[in-house]
Amino acid sequence: MRTVLLPVDFSDDNPLILAFARGLPSLGVRHVILGHVVEASGLEGPLIARKVDEARDQLLKHASELSAAGLSVEVQVVTGDPVEELSALAAETHVDAAVYGSHAKSVAGQLFVGSVSDRLMREATIPHLVVRFDLLRNQADPAVLLRRFGEKLVLATDFSLSAAHAFTFTVDLPPGAVKHLTLLHAIDPALTGEKLRRAEEGAEFHLKNLQAMCTQQKMPSSVSIRVDTPVHAVLDEIGERRASGVIVGTRGRNAVQEMLMGSVSMTLMRQASCPVLIVP
Picture 1 (cartoon, rainbow, N blue to C red):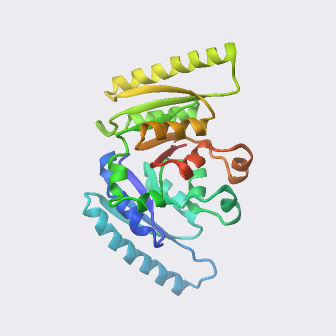
Picture 2 (picture 1 turned 180 degrees about the horizontal axis):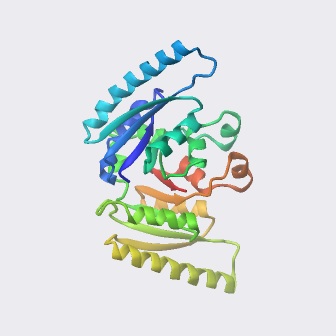
């Protein structure tokens, strides 16, 4: 993870996410693209041009804050729909991940009000590192949340392809960035008897294989198997270990699908007491 996109919307919460981003070097990030989208619908050319120039000037001021943290910074101002344009910007600039804050809206809130951060996550083709603004407000120095991200890291895996991507991303973090990794798997609580025993044996086999790969990368790790729903298993693991970060794969459900079936990644984004790295 060398280059990241940091969307900026000039809201009152901007100083929080910029302060958070000063901790990015601890995860190996060297280059940040500060991106802003001017919504130009219904505006005439001269007004659009003025808004673009004003946005660029503001981004350049923010860039100096990140440069002081040792980051190389580039500013990009585009026009159009925020989600579409930020996704396109991420693709065009070949960033490794996107970093942003979330207000953790409820599913109903997403359906009726909308959330740029939630839409970005669902449509993501690259990893997204998300932190709730209320967590940032509780920190004297929000950058500490990133500097400590790998101290007690939890990786939730269901052994799917997206979970494999999340694991690969984790072991590719810079040497020393992860102080301890907990490999967590949740087993369906509806299972009993022989089916439960086989599920536990299978989970232990797969987790031990992943742990062996961690050992090869000199990444300290442990395994945890919980008989519970995935969301409860991860939240309980985070709470008991006082985890500093969590990594999870996602299958990209939309808001309606989430309301009907649930989404581990979206629920973690709203409830986890630490930053969440979501890998598609």
